[in-house]
Image (cartoon, rainbow, N blue to C red):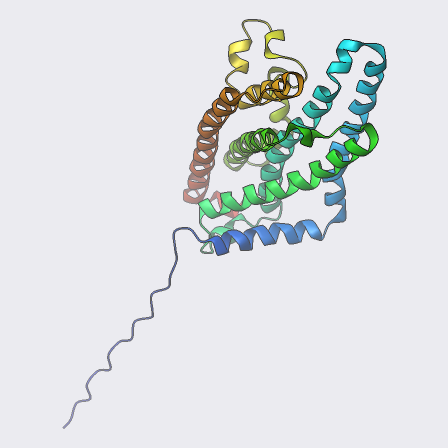
Amino acid sequence: MNVAEPRPRLEPPAQRNPRFSPGRVAAMSLRYLYLLRGSWPRILEMAYWPTVQMILWGFITQFFYTQSSYLAQGFGVLLSGVLLWDVLFRSQLGVSISFLEEMWSRNLAHLFASPLRPGEFIASLTVMSLARTLIGVVPATALAILFFGFSVYDLGLALAALFLNLAIMGWAIGLMTSGMILRFGLGAESLAWVSVFALAPVSGIYYPIATLPEWLQPLAWCLPSAYVFEGMRAVLLDGVVRYDLLVSAFAINALYFAAGVGIFLIALRQARVGGQLMHVGE
């Protein structure tokens, strides 16, 4: 009697799951862009506030221009401060809002049940933040040229370094607040809207850091934004690019961004272990 030999067990081919996939980052970025494209009020809102602020401050500084020679020198400084501050605000809000949209739709658990890795999720949030920032700020800079004959692009190549520093700082704050929201739930949602404004008085947006009380100046110099706006004034008023300020801003931003990523990853790990991803948004 012949006994049939057992068939060899066929192992499924190993599925490739790279540690970092640009394709998954692109897919997540497209997801957020499709959400944005499907809601014209969101696009209008992103361009609305920078434009309103630019027009308001433009007319204020234009009034000062006719009244004071000193303030006339600072005409471009005030407008540049408004526009660059909005880069920081929009970058932070771009990360936070994209993250909150996942919480509002209760989609976080579905995302992390897929091959999506936390690093890819963070990368897609920063890509979407950059897109939101450009959509919001670029129209305002064009209208500043049209209405007031002032171009922030006169800052030259220094503008790219100033923009990038503020964007990185905004991403860091956005990741920190997103981590706090993930840890404490939507009860901490207000952090996404108010956190960055707490830094405005000590960032030196419209005045030098030396204007602050002496005891507050060391705190201001711990913020990359202080170096950015001091560097902006050096270019506009003195025609000098302060590379020392830019390098210091990048160095501090590296620490801030690392802290933001760390806080977000720790909060995400705790949520996954504790099963909170299944209940976020409730």
